[in-house]
Image 1 (cartoon, rainbow, N blue to C red):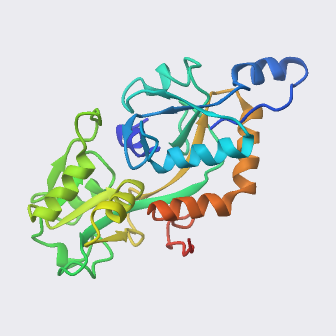
Image 2: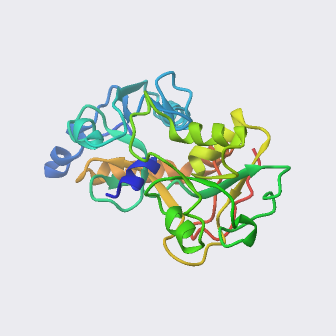
Image 3: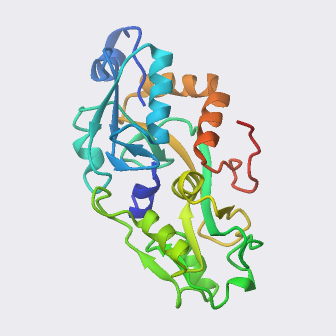
Length: 281
């Protein structure tokens, strides 16, 4: 899995196996998933996604799912870096990762429960407030903040913006370093003119802490790499019954999940990343 994909999951939730399965299927699935708690693998310092004080939107989603199951939430905390899945989900310390980018072999993905996109963040009253794409000539000569190695960096390079860009570290221990917050603070201080961030990071941070900024979903980029990603819940490989239970829960409660995400400030887009979803909260 590329490092940027590890970051966005979630950047990036098994359910209670309320019935026993006969034969080998039960041995392959239900005996590995706790029926006493909703056991979540999470980063303790990945706000606005997850946080040890349970203030992140993934924490609120975990509460929502657990309430549907009438189970308490139980966390296994581990930094979202190399070894996260190996030391949490695969070690059977927990049963679900609440946010995981679709399509990687480290986990078995549920159906996606939202699609989001990278965003351009600018002062809402500034001269870049009308920009809708990284191809816009208004960005020429501007200093743009970018997380090094993430997909939008290729777009900046293609459009001649990388030379003056300011890079921020991709793989960090968020207990000690917060690139997204550092970038937005630099934007507020005028050290950069714009910031490019994964929507589920940038959107909630702007909503709660930077009210003078505008979040622009980058849905108009036509060339690769793509900037939108479908986010799932990740469970252990082979736990197909558990996966299907989660899929059912997501399907039945999609409207409430959408409302929770919108309330948090997460920009939601259609499955193909071409339109912003208008959802009232």
